[in-house]
Length: 259
Image (cartoon, rainbow, N blue to C red; front, top):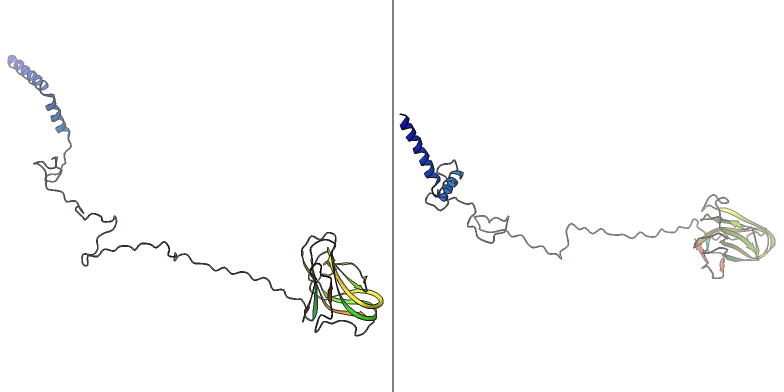
């Protein structure tokens, strides 16, 4: 029994040596085949067989294979009933965009200048520098007077613009067009020059003081003129400018009657 066991052991050793001394490529193929994963499914394509071999399973059907070439991506075929295919129309770059709505632009009209009085005369001039003066006069007819009372409306407040009355070239008080003296703009107020004389020319002056920095047309509205001491010699401006005229043309003086 001991001899038999020794002989059996020697046979196993020889068999192992024979396997190790064989073709190494064959062993590699054997190992490769043994390490190749196989599908656990039976009777399906890919059951460990190489496609096209005698051991291949039934052919796999690929959805859409063999469709006509040139079909756009994402565009399917038309209905089977009519066989038509919908094709989007090309965009016209010159056509207006319907989303662009033109918003009309309306010019703001200039504010309408409204005279603060009716039956009055507007005396105005462009004052654009310091120490300027513009005179406006009418013929008084040579009547004896004790003073002149002007009923006026002042539309502009400034302590660097002045006004003054004059008779025959004699000036009255130099008075600023300031709200400190005339708190209510465009409201009738009385401005008085006291003088005893025979009046031939009566006038009104507007102008600028030494610190004026504006450049604009300045106006005074005259509602009436009363020549004190000479009844019925005044001006009411109910129908016209009462003979008022500007003296000279410098600073574009203007006399406007507001009926």
